[in-house]
Length: 318
Image (cartoon, rainbow, N blue to C red):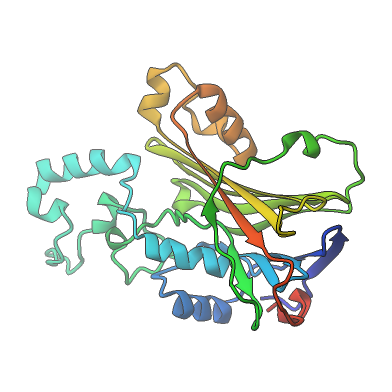
């Protein structure tokens, strides 16, 4: 990472919450190697940041959002590799000329001593990617199911965990004209997929006197193939307690996935220029009316949980 210090913003709101947001430059090679080792990742996105958001409650529980945790869940998910739009055309032409064996990525050398580019049947190859890896062996779109990390101080017992709930985000409260104590947008990682589209993981946070709200969004556009949008919203009404006096955090996850062919069949926009960024992609997919998976969870923070102070995010920023 460059020598610039991270930009750090903090805010407090009711209910014993403190928000800390740290935006950093793109990480350097040494940090990339460390992240690959810690996450067991075969590669990393071209634009990778140590930016992070932490929402810390006085009970000793912190909600944390960071690229390292997201990449770890990408590795664990282990989705099959996506075939790029040009792959089938390339493969068909290659079969006609050389036969089926080489088109499937045979490692045998040609007469010139070079190997056929098996990555064309699964993922693009570039000097920015780890050329020693067979990209067909991993999901090169960096698709992650990441829904934030729950960090618990020593002594907090029982440790809270997400459970399904009938609670919903109070969107009416979010529209109230309360002063905004902190607003920030962070990019955790981004890749242009070697000019085959874009993968982006980022978040927005808004802290107000009576509540806070986070939108964590993974957006993927593989041109000519598919679009994925995973939006995870977090909300806490800091004025509300349940019967036991506990604080409740609500998490809503919406997952949309469309192929270009399906969008085209419904007459929906299906050109890359119509999906230039996550905000517009979300609007287009919502208007297209395609399938969506929605789940709701809650995190219950007990008021009587013991805790001890944790180091500040600024002190831990790389």
